Amino acid sequence: MLLRLLPLLLPTLSMATPQVATSLTLELQAFGRTSTHELVIMADAVRVYSPAAGLEGVYDAATDTLQITLGNDGPSVVANRDSVAALASRLQVETDTLERSLDALPPEHAKLSRLRMQQLFKRPEDSAEGVAVDRALASGDDHTLHGIRCKGYRLLNGDAEVGTGYFASPHALVHGHTLAAMLALVHDLYLALQQAAPAYVGWVLPSDLLSSLQPGLGIPLRLTIVNYRGDITTDWSVSGIREVMAAPQRPE
Figure 1 (cartoon, one colour):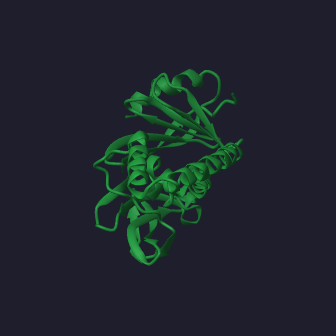
Figure 2: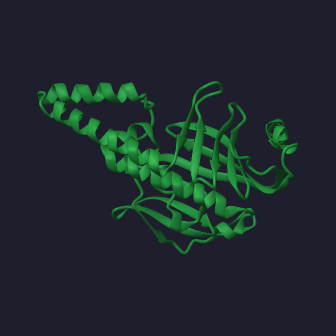
Figure 3: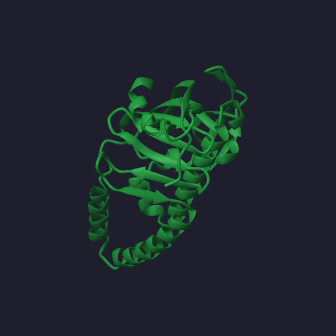
């Protein structure tokens, strides 16, 4: 896996002195799909790669901004708290208008319209409906994963247990504070969009996963989320952690 990353890292090596970084391999199951991602965590940035798509995203710690690449030749999306707040505001107005239009329809027509919207958003038909995690309780079931002591949690939606998680302190990883900051940003972006359009955001975002990335818990090394039927909707598993050499993130 590391050898596949070297061509992506080498163009920057001549521009900056390589420094010790953390390479973290993430196996992710969400929306019925399984994928592998490699995170290279530095003091000033986190770069996210996949074997199929190459560079998927870059988190810049200095600006607290996440840049996501959509496909090999697709456009990039730049997300920070200001840009998502503006998007959430527009989305709130649009969804309020849409809800009023649906409420004006006969019930059977409104149901059909909502179904067509769900198909438009292209959520996989065979994926189990996820649930949001709104709180976590220490389970006492602590574990050591990859040589790192992790605190075990029961993940809850109301009073219902919807999953389990094992979280490490950011201090346990080299530059773990940078990864923790990125996860906190992702969680806050999700909350802003979820608050603006709770009825629709769950169709296009893995709400069960994003709601689990609660900053106070630390860095998740293992998460398993189930729905009310007991079906696994999301499985987040770190399968490898190692030190690598990478160049610091250069400002754009």
